[in-house]
Length: 461
Image (cartoon, rainbow, N blue to C red):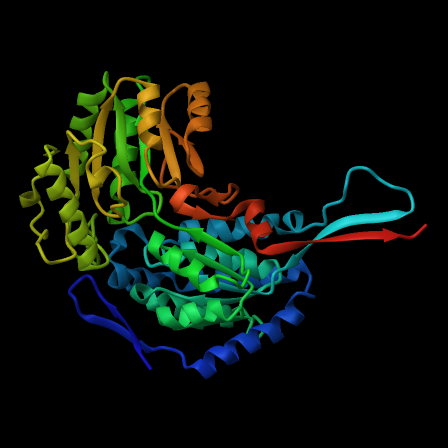
């Protein structure tokens, strides 16, 4: 049986090695989950939610150990403290809204002699295929509401963050969940595909690349298994003429380079009104040049390595192609001594003179590079924002609420921000359009994805 190996981006050393689950272990996990879920679905929502809160407490109790462990696995600097602010916010939010979100829907037109309502039944067994870039946040988006809704959960975590799955399992065990209700499985890609193709699970949530999403769809073909897919992104920002310039610069630099740009909703392309363009670029370059690239275990580091060398190689290729086509690179890598070809350590880069013939403005980068273009106004910015095969988020920077709403209606994306970016509000649906995927997590709609409607039409008079 194959081993799953995590290579630390810090120094290329082997951090963890785990054997992939045997076929017998996978079958046993499925059978145990089915048995546990039959009982769990009868447990009152409030009691299910209390178990999830105990899981949260158990996870938070491990946070001091988890932060450096996470840096070792995928490179995020320890100074940012892990993911547990957003993690706690999301769990508490779905707990608080669960009773309302899962309550029966009663038609408004009462009919004497009949009881009529729609219940939200759990789907059964949910498989979460989680990514490495925000390994706690992305996984909990589905795991917490799935359990509260009455489902059992199997977690297959990315090889790069293989230890995260073990942390989830430990916290679930400490929370006292029924045996078998939650299981962390170490699986190869082939095993994951076979599990999905077997029809043994009732829902698959996947966060990852477009190609990964296509592989999930192929595996599920013919099983009628519902899928939630959050795939690639090329999220744009538009800075209007009336924007608060300094505020926009500061937030967009962070939105582009936090987590070394390895964010599903990170800013990858920026369109700036011509009246602000020069000052915006100057401010953006100045702030970007202040990052400190280095070992993520060092408190002084503000930009860690990318998770793997091949991701950094992709960005370097995009930058070279853009410069060869006439773009200007504003950041001298010499100012970032840790930046070295052939390693995951990569300086942030700001490009101007870019256009949509360049891959850096069209294809997902998922790294610390951003292109900035000058636009004449709303119409040009809108056309450029929509000129993409992706659609996760877009942000508009303006003091005009009506203009942001008008533009938002026309932007082809799952979320529209005004004067913020790179954030998930648990009260809103997290969803995408085009090649970014299908389905939604979080909010009431997230609960609907993890349940099925069941109508009752009862004559009693």
